[in-house]
Image (cartoon, rainbow, N blue to C red; front, side, top):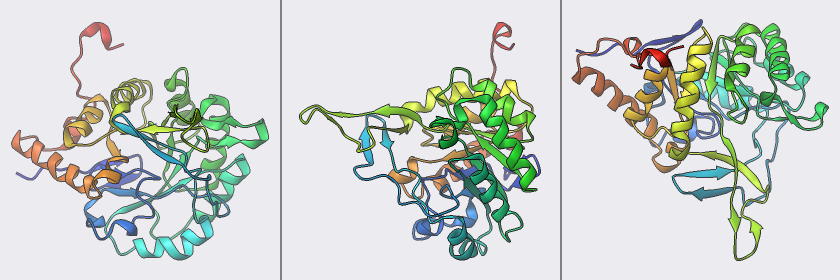
Length: 310
């Protein structure tokens, strides 16, 4: 028996639940020497801004126990270059392309979404709301449910593409931002983005990263990400995409059982470039070995005691 791995994220249909995470997979074609892009359920490309960005000064990546800190600074080619040069190269591959979008103002988010609207070969938009809002003195959009709601509302009005809102874990209660995204028309939410962290060079008595702080990802954050996925999946009715430290099919299954309809593979691709396809293959084998006909049977199928179900 070959299990049915197809999933639906609102109007977006994926042939399987494995996507690559934004910022960890370039624009997709960089990984062609290592895997078949058409095997994946989807590719989420590097975050796109209205104009090209050079990113932060180095050093901007450092390994940590069971993970890494990055302060790349959202380096990207800009939305125009993506549409002209990057997206055409992805159209020949049988996979869904998701554009990750960010800006420093609400208007910049809308500007990018409007340029992406109607682009041939683009399947969905993911909003990265972990960028500082320069109009509000540097406050992070995703840390404030009100700001997140405004950006989601504005982007929802500017595009008919399926809209996924990527949630920051650096909040008091991630369910509040998830509900705000749902209320303003998001088709799905994805979580978690990286946790803010810092590494210190004790000999030099200086931060390791030139930016001082960075985003922590990798296996170290997985238990936190699974917990937040479970919380959000019970708080909203729209689909949830889980991510955070997934290295194996069993890791992916933790998120799926906790309520995620799909998963994104991020830091693992730095260690094993073909990790996303390996995880997909092992996930299919795991279901087949247990006679599970469809992946959808497992979404949110976590068994908990009655007192913990509310």
